View 1 (tube, rainbow, N blue to C red):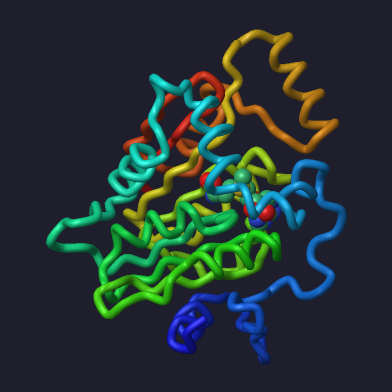
View 2 (cartoon, helix red, strand yellow):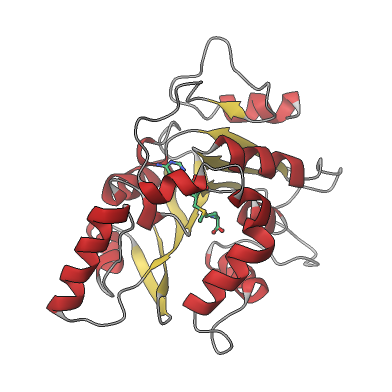
Length: 263
Ligand SMILES: C[S@@+](CC[C@H](N)C(=O)[O-])C[C@H]1O[C@@H](n2cnc3c(N)ncnc32)[C@H](O)[C@@H]1O
């Protein structure tokens, strides 16, 4: 991690550590003990194997099927839509905003890098994740920014208890992870808190395709057994409205949904 990026991200923290640990190429705020007892699905995210195949195999196959491939958006279309919903530019645009962007649960940095393509040279894109193996891959796969590029940096922290100051970011993204959080609504409170007024939030998460009580009970059993939450069609949009978001929009796919709004 470049020392200038580390300083910028330290400046966003509520409680900056006295001796920041950036030895692994990311700022580690969890330390060697990490978080206690991850759920069975989160244990997979913390394995050494998954980060090696995540971006090229797991993500495109699993997510594109869940989004209804070949009708649903592929990864490139999803990235372009996300930059648009977050008020960022597209690659090749003449002007790119100098935005501060947070990618919550960034995994190996696949979405973080796509967001950085829509941010200008004075911008800062921060990827946060709890998994050391995912972050190691994110650091290895993220090139050092050139003179015209945004800064990109990674933080090891807990998405359910975001370590940043209030109103630190212009845009917050949380893709493919809300269903893994032990308390997704506390995580959403944190995302709203760290967004500046007028800032934009976009979430890609699970979707329960059948709005029946039995499907809800089935979803609850899955959550208890694996730690994976399946969200109803109105649950996430309603949660954004409850937190004062406006301009709420939603794209529904067979097993996933993208929800966005403005703080
Ligand atoms: C499926 S990956 C998503 C990666 C990327 N955002 C994407 O859309 O492809 C889910 C990530 O969520 C992370 N995660 C789950 N619970 C977390 C938590 N409480 N705090 C931080 N990261 C968490 C996992 O470590 C994993 O890297």
